[in-house]
Image: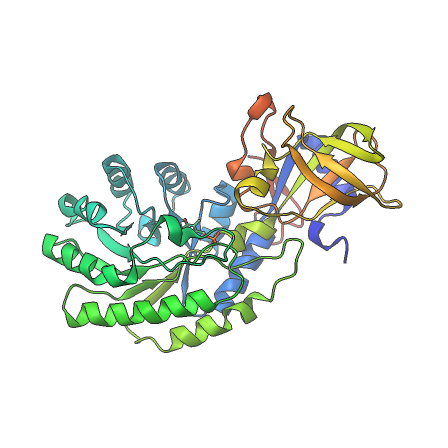
Length: 387
Ligand SMILES: *Cc1c(COP(=O)(O)O)cnc(C)c1O
């Protein structure tokens, strides 16, 4: 049980990978990417899953999703380029950043991406000149003040303003396919999704009645939660109320989702090495070669607390894990039960695929972790692909 979050790697395998590829090291397990994708696809039958690249924009993850027959959710020119480089079919990609420069729109159109997101009149107007090539999803905001990352604070129009936005698009001749929302990441339960689906179903029907366009798509965003230090319910149970809400939609409506964390999060571990140690005020402090400016950046930006453990076994004492930089904020955890560690020992963070390496910096010139992926082909049994 205690070992489960470094599954499927044994301590010896992790040690061998670090001997070969160095430390700090992020190890992506593509088999887990496949398992997460399949679990969510099963929990949301009939919903097309667009993997949101933002939490882990890594070629191994993107390729695995494409091989599974999945779709992509791109938000920046860099993500569009990564998808193109991996030969993703642009018709299977949507561009979901609600605020774009003209050059971002053109770059995506040049790559063949057709579907974009807008959430305000200025943004809809940007598409007037592209109305023959682009289609829109209008993003609606559903506030979730309790959620760790309330994405509806920064983006989305009020549900009361959504039809007016649809009317503007119709007036300008910009085709609209439907509505999208994102209830916020790592949602505690599916209540917001269900509420948002009900409101959007009404909006879709009203827009059709007014003949404002096709309005045949509903994008239910991301937010699907994963286990960090606290257990969460299975994805099938989490999605049960969503399945029920979607079952009430007219058959003509295509439903898509934009999962990021659920696919990437459990699919990687982060391995770091004790650079030095000191006893301070009765506790051991272990200084790692990765910290909150690196792969553990999600502790700051994403408010995540990752399960961490040492590879070495032994009697446990509360210890402090600190990152390598000279900044005092660079402390990973103050209360970790750890065996007594030596310089050179390895520490492993679990569930570290999402919003971790992606937001790491090289502050103080400590390089970002090397990333490797294993099990790129089904049946690889741990074979490593270097990138
Ligand atoms: C970040 C983001 C996602 C992914 O959300 P998760 O909660 O990680 O699944 C999906 N869509 C958009 C528009 C995003 O910005």
